[in-house]
Length: 346
Image (cartoon, rainbow, N blue to C red; front, top):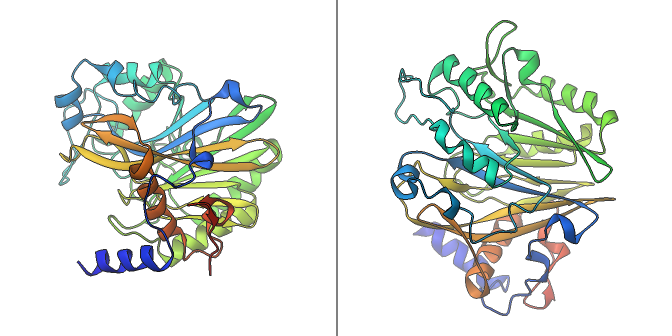
């Protein structure tokens, strides 16, 4: 209750009153054919199992049917929060997830062409689950970062060349080295700053933009911890252009830092791991041209299907995101106009 009152107070004093009058011009999705920039959509955590399977069944076409702009981007990247496997020996954990290979069709039809796989559920079915995931993703030509058959492979970037621009992607999880790959065994790329900064510096000369995906933070917390802020900014200093975070299951703020952007948490997207039938979130659309520009696109996930949001409902998502961005060194939203006026950060 205290947190709700604080948020309501911030909304009031800052003038963030959700309404259909919010200027949405800066938050409308584009498709590849509408711009010379490379259009990339990022989402948070995706779990295509459990409640997802029970409600979607074979109706795969319905999941993204109402947001056709999603599949018309140049690149779509999600956090794939489980292995893809038929293996039955799960790890001893409170929650374990795995995706039936039959749902690989969803990745293909919706143009999900890269996933971050470095997260705390990719190891739910052990090394076998990781190896199976790589096999299945390779079979449908979906790229992945953050896992590999060795530590070197797990740290390798994925590079796309589109519209004359080269975009390099990296992914990491686990500051304590959980499920980390070794020189001889499959696993994830651990979130060790020495590895990360070295990988960024190595990649930077070969690409126009460096994107780093982090599975990090504290679940259900609205603000990043100090170490996350420090690491995110250190990555920008090392040459990264965009940091995309997930794991807290809820949205956190977006920060401009120097010439880069840090989205601390994109929250849940299509998340079959919980039974909640409706939640609002964003797709983070990023345009890569001479520079990068950011468009948080409000969407509603209703019974594990993505729906467009407009009017007051969309404004509420953006205004809330604005509140959680407000305490950053340079609030992302200071570049945009909400309710017809340009908001300034402290």
